[in-house]
Image (cartoon, rainbow, N blue to C red; front, side, top):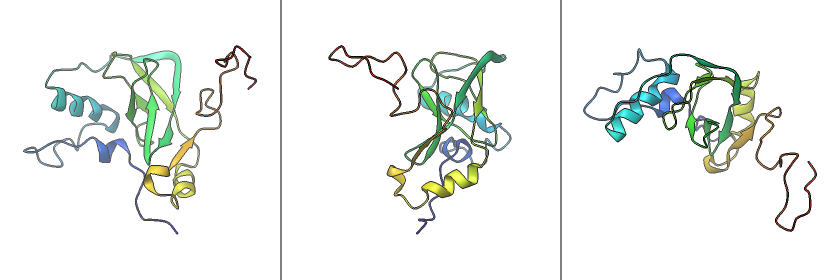
Length: 147
């Protein structure tokens, strides 16, 4: 039984605040809307990165019904398959190419029966997926954790 609540993407999450018109950012690329949204809320200018970080990528995942991706600094933001890139408003890290699943609609459908706060999915190729410890992880008792 699908609940009819779509997975949230950047273009529906990062919206202008009142008194701006709801379509005020319609011509801003979805991946760049986070910068407008951040500036609007913290009341300071944030510069868009000049280019991509070569050789780096991030994996998009569904977390509590939102497509999100993590910055190496620990920050995260809502992302979209319509514009598969992200840059960090917190640390200024440049644009990262995002890896989404080939079948975005199928992945969204696979979590549609869950309540929104239980909708979680991560890319099977993501080396730092939740619940999969890194190969060099050590538990608090000093025993190595096998992957």
